[in-house]
Image (cartoon, rainbow, N blue to C red; front, side, top):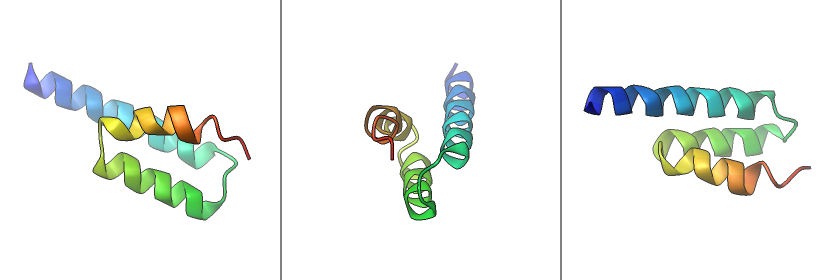
Length: 57
């Protein structure tokens, strides 16, 4: 069960990172969000979709 949860988190992180890369933000902001998602695997995607995605630039 724990392995399945880990795999799901990994898939979620990969989806979010691809979404960040395809976005229109500056490169610096993309790198920052990728680092946040990498170091906060559960909280990072949530923060990105609440804060980063709503901040359309």
